[in-house]
Length: 604
Image 1 (spheres, helix red, strand yellow):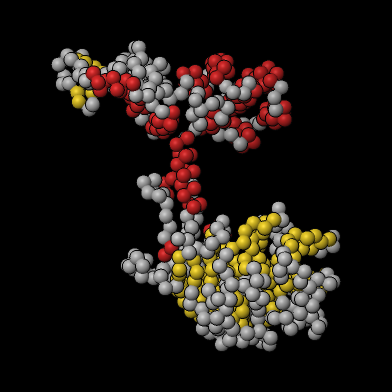
Image 2 (image 1 turned 180 degrees about the vertical axis):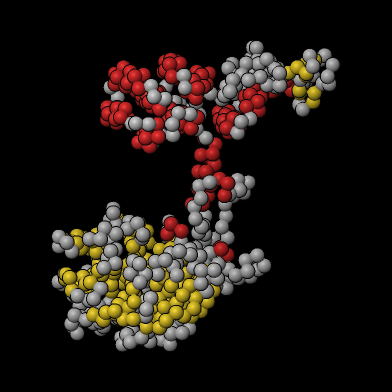
């Protein structure tokens, strides 16, 4: 392609072949300072330090001797050359090819090796024989000799598929037998390719091969694969600048303590002109609502899996179910479930949010299963008056649940309370069913969490602590467990590797049962109640709290983060209230420091 009528050598992606770091190149049409000269109506026009000579002058402006000498001697660093090449690649992707030619010529850089340029053009044109010949030229530039075979295989595979799509079955068969098979590479794939000969039409071929068909799209995808085998000095990886920018944005998000929105990998969703910063005022650490309908200590709270309801259990013998307004995020009382004589210390929603199971404290031998849609009690279960049913967990199928307590009961039951299985002698403190539908995790009085399989009646040790595990919860993916450990605080365990990952600081934990939770988008945050009347929030990767929420006047027993609304959280306290936490109200009209009474910053 010619640039402004100049006669310099250029191609779609290449730049100067011999100019290096501002030095002159023969036949390139550049001055010693690397600037482009061109003709305008037959008159020579040049630029120097931003100045130009007028048409018809017949002269070329020059820089002073000292300036020219200094510019000639200045060599670009490797990092500077890399940046110029990245800019050139990006501009080429935008179709600004003349600008790329000028940039490469002025800088004296080369966007890619001339052999790589030929190879690219031949691949995009579908000239497979020439593309194969280009590979021989590239062989000397490659680090791995085996890469040539892999690249040739990819080329021939595209050639084979395009022949098939065009209905040239004999030519395709020749490629398969005479070119692909002799490579003796990836024979399993060759068997798959041979099966495409049976495709009756082009649409069938594209569907079975999961291939876009002959054209720019499939060849561009092929070129992306081929580029992975070439050193970046020969041909840049595809869309390298976009990749680096995306990585930078993701890194800034990862380091942002308060980032609590859905991750979007698109660069269009962010400004590249500013660093990514989330304000603490967008984080759920401001009291939005105080629920005072309970008339005694509130021991537990839990949002439904779809985030539309909140259930709270109290010492006042009631469970209150609250409806979450999807627009305002305000809660209103939906129904009150009464009759829990010992109080309600634990609640569990069924996977479909239809049922809610309520358990009592240590001396409670009963369990209530409520239909939340109708408000009716479906089951009131009690195996023995000597039992202590203090914890419960639903099987993922929603048809069974497990329950137990510290007196050695561990049952699996159906929705009518019928006993399906039991495990003797396990003094259960807290329970959780994993997504495999077979494994039940149970913390016991031996300061451990064990996995129990009710199908083959096997059990194994997973977590061992040095102090009593008062409660625990598991992340959505089943990989991490969050433990509230007596006198120690909140611990994060990796259940797969069976290692302690992190101990979170700040919380006051004695021998009361306090329930913590994962929360936020991607469960990046952890929240816990505390005996010092506060709610603590940590970023999962940081041991120090990023926020301390004040407002409760007695121990905070439980926190629950809304799984559907990442900016909404609830806390239940012995002060008889449930606090709903959200972002700072009237975000745009408040003074910068006008809403700090509820949230103290701990990351400074």
